[in-house]
Length: 174
Image 1 (spheres, one colour):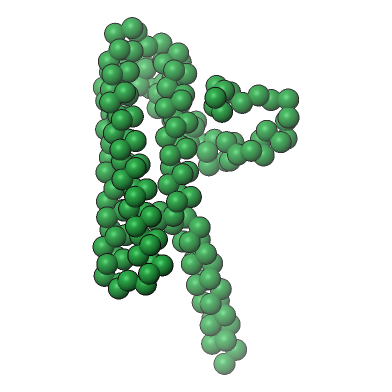
Image 2: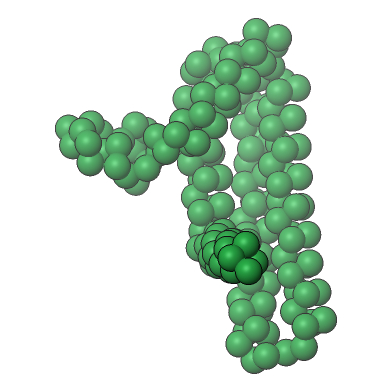
């Protein structure tokens, strides 16, 4: 009997932890969309830094900048479309529409995010196609270090609270 009660309590705790985590990281929330936008904005903001580190030639710079300008327009269109569909999803959920309609809306939002991530990866591939072998290796290292910093929370505000004299690199707020 004790074993059944313990396992029951463990299952209840796991259920609440999982539902809380899913609600916090839900791709159907406006907060998730804003974080996604912010990450892409930071990445595009630091492209000139990448160019300096990679020693991009003027010909490479022109090609890459043309690709970037076209992609930014596509991103803004996709973000507007995702935002509209997320708002529609919340209205549907608030109005208690049937489960099939809500699940189809969820599938649509997932598809839009997948399209956007495909565009991002194709943009990254186009960038890599215009680089030399040495530049590709440097670029991989930059991305690896960024991901490491992101996992360790180096982009959090706590870093600036610990060292208030440190300025934000790249004037992101402008």
